[in-house]
Amino acid sequence: MGSNGHHIIPFDVYIKIFAALIVLTVITVAAAQVDFGAMNVVIAMAIASVKAGLVLAFFMHLKYDDKLYAVMFGTGIFFLVVLYLFCFLDIHSRIPVSNPL
Image (cartoon, rainbow, N blue to C red; front, side, top):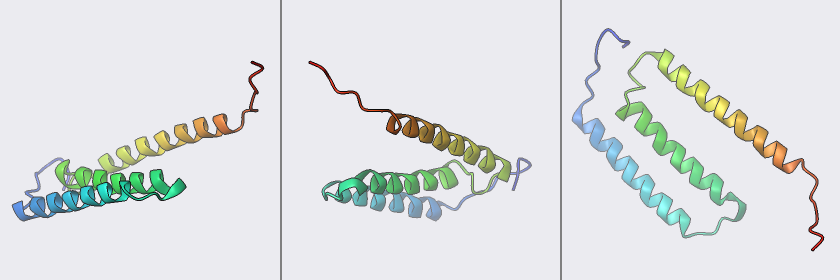
């Protein structure tokens, strides 16, 4: 819709998104009770990403706003991932040093 007007979201949409966030929170708590091994963090981050996406799209109105804002947000997330990747590669490329004590 852009910056020239406001999009009015029906109240039932807010109720549905709220219900989805509650369900995803219950799924998060249930997933925390199960040991998925190395996938624990991946599953938790996936659920959190879906919840964050719902909040960004509907409560922060990115779904109905100018697409430039979504591109700017996506660019920020992309560079955050790149910086985390650089840190991950740096940590895992170091030679382990044994403690002489």
